[in-house]
Image (cartoon, rainbow, N blue to C red; front, side):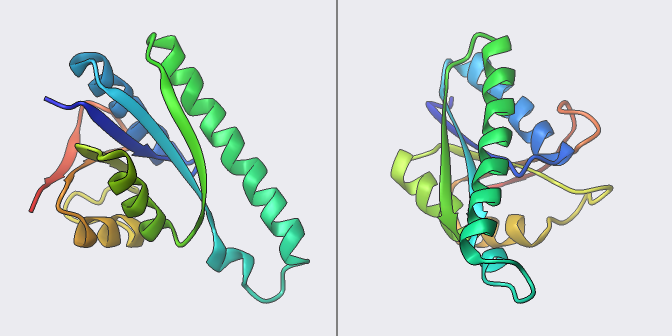
Length: 150
């Protein structure tokens, strides 16, 4: 049984599948739902971009749009969710927020046909957490790709 669920979003179809799975789990378990989007400071610091401030504002706007989409998915299922924008390195911020809210499970999306592994953020979250990690496929929220708990 879950009491607190954390889903992450970057606006991709993979993240949308993760949010849909998190909404389903929240409804099934009567759990609190939190959705996190991270403004990646590594992108802001990349060379060749305009000013750091402009990039940060654009990233914040994108994160807020992704969270608004997640909130709509939750509202459509009559689930309340707490949405948050965080700043830093995504795996670090995801793990810190999971600790802050004492998440029972972290729900992530996977890219493409990866059935046995995650992308960089997912790998880092999995390696750094003793929480349950649910990874869903972008093609269907019913297909659980990986379940990890240490």
